[in-house]
Structure formats: structure tokens, C-alpha cells
Image 1 (cartoon, rainbow, N blue to C red):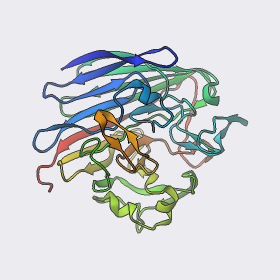
Image 2 (cartoon, rainbow, N blue to C red):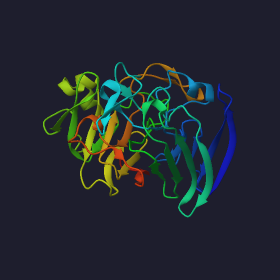
Image 3 (cartoon, rainbow, N blue to C red):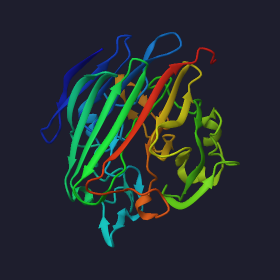
Length: 356
């Protein structure tokens, strides 16, 4: 195993950005960049042993800096997903955030954590090559209270797992919800729509959304709805539905409440791509996962000259519930001084040679 570090360009603000390629002995590898801590490449074998890049992204830094970058591979914070009306209350005080999604707050604001340069420390761990990303979010940044110190460690293991360990501490009471926003296509990036992938999610309930994709506070069972992925089924089966929740999200853009005890690493989702035989299993210690079927993707030039389009990638964003700071019956998103925010998400890759 090894790590290769290379320059990846300089931001328009003059900050140097580097790439970190984590290599395993069998040829599998991933590349991360210090801009947004983004996962830029992830190469995994298909049933014939052929390596393909299975995450969407860009070849060059200026493309990551563009407004039209839909968070490709990025680390998301201070609060991932949406907060209604871009405001929340904490100890009786209202905190006003950036309204970067109509009147609402999305993925940490105008810059969030996805458009900043992280410090990075590459190292060889006992589990594989790794990069430890650091970022200090200043008190008042994007409207959030407290200085927040964030560490995210990404490790590529020999058995084809990508492990993300999140850690944060604050000097003032605040809210935190961190995730990764990689777009996956197990047939290979640039191979077209993901509707033919098979999906299973370990959840019996979702948080219902309105037409702005904001959770209303209602928790609904998936049984009897298009959102039911309790058993393996084609993603297109949901996307083609006239279910009111699918119409509201313009597809799947919902927070699933993962079975089991939050805080413990447990199964979250399974995705299969019949053509390549690739399988991705997700595990998380978070209470929820946002399954996003790429409903707002637009035509865009991706890596290696390929053209991305609507629903050419899907996201499984492990998280606390969106809009949790405004809904008291959702899991608490508050972090106090002296406490540690911690969670782990694992993406495990394998091949099912029997798929066809």
C-alpha cells in the first residue's frame, strides 16, 4: 500500500490544493483532494476484474469551484441537508443562517465545508492508507455559533472498504451534522442513468417532505409506498411512481430512519449493478441516510470528457435527520462544549458474479 501526493491547483483565492491517492496492492485506489475534502476518484473491479471509477467528479480544480458543482464527493457541514427558513433556535435565541436554497438553508450554506480548503495529513494506518482532514469553522461562519474543530479520516482498506470517521468539538453550544456527498454509479462514472441499479435500505420509516424537500416532521412507514426499499428492487420502480412523496422530491430525496441503535455501526443499505456485478454495502452509526437519486442533476462535463446528465449518479448521505434543529422529536443535533461529535460510515465493495 502507498500514498501519492500531487498538486491539484490553486484556488481563485490563492490557496494551494493537493490530491492524495490511496493505493492498495491489488490495484484498487481512491483519490481525495483538499478542496472540500472531496472524494475525486474511486476505482473498484467488476466481475471480470476490470477497474472502473465509480464516483462522479471533475478532473480539474476550477470545475470544483464552479457554482454548478453539485457537491461532488465533498465533505458537508456544519449542518448537512436542509434547515427550513434558514434559521433555528438555541436556548431561546434565533440563529439566522444563509438562505442558499430558496428561503432555506442547504448543506452548511453558501460555502459550507464543501468549498473550503482543508488541511490534510496522509498516513499509513494499520487498516490501510489514509488521509486525515482538518478544518476549523470560525464562530459566526455561515451564521453558526461557536468555533468548531472538525476532523474527518478517510481510509482505504485491503478488502475494498472506504471508511470515513467523523469527529468534531466546539467551544460554544452549536449544532452539527456532517456527511459525505459522493455520487456513485456502480457501472462506472459516465455510464448513464442509475435507474437500473438495485437498492435495498435497512429502514421501515422515512421523514416525509414537502414540495421544497423539507421534512414536515411527520414520520411515515414505507410499507405500501414507492419509498419501500426493504427488499432489493430497481431504483426505477420508485422513480416511475406517482406516489405523492416521489412527486414532492422529484424522485427519491428522502431521509430513511435506519433500523437499530444510533451510535452503533450497523447495516444501512445495499446497492447492486447487474451489468458489472459490483455491489456496495453501506454501514453507519448515524440515525438516518438520505437516498438522493440525482433529481436535480443537470448536463455537465465530468471526468475524462464524459457528459453527466439527470440521474447519472446516486447519493447515500449518512446523517442526522434534516431539519432536526427545528423539530424537537427528531434526534438532537446540539453539540455542547466538552462533548465529542463522532460517527463512522463504511462503504464496502464486492462483486456478485451471479448477477446478469
